[in-house]
Image 1 (spheres, helix red, strand yellow):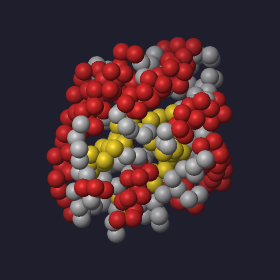
Image 2: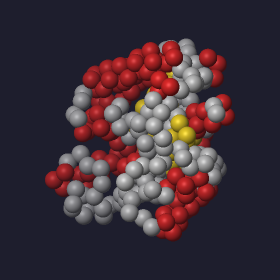
Image 3: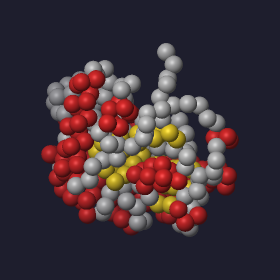
Image 4: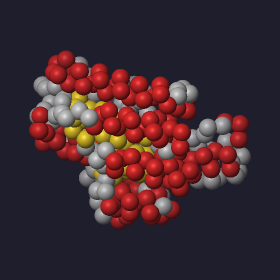
Length: 286
């Protein structure tokens, strides 16, 4: 099977991208705001208990994120003038309204992140998927006052129909295909792919790979420095995916603060949202 969603175009053969106000690099924070079901296994820090019901160890670890961790992260984002691109499970709207209100007060961008991270967005028939996507989009629109423009699937999962169905609902971009440092057009009319990353992602760095705070800080700086250097020949995008139950832990939060201070200290960096990146790219490129 060949993938027909997008074409191959090496970055060396593209017209340069120009970001607003002469910025070299567009930077956004993808803040994963997720609801998990207590009776289903999901993201775990300790695999030995993740099939138990209830799994107090892993559920509690995840639940820390929206009870405590996200408020620490919000303070840090505010300190550096960064608006989150909120990757939102639609079920969050019902369970954690205070988080929605905090994001609305800060004019966050709201992306659809499925209904819950306890269910991957895969193996769905077209009618079932259309129903799920419609429910998620309308739920988020009602809760936030904004109709979402972007999508990232739970666990970065899609079906072959997802981009087309999202386009039918008025969305314009996805983050799931982490294969570029620039936005590009999909072979679905009106749909883009915007860069995201699984490498420089707090969940993968801290939990899967076991990196320490100082190691993660250096990785984020190295990622930024290389993309900043690359941007001499055309604009690039740097995404920083965060999970409040990971980066929001007390002993890790300072490293996010230091990383954002480093990035924000550069004058020609556009501190923005994935919505604004997608809109600017769609409007200014052929």
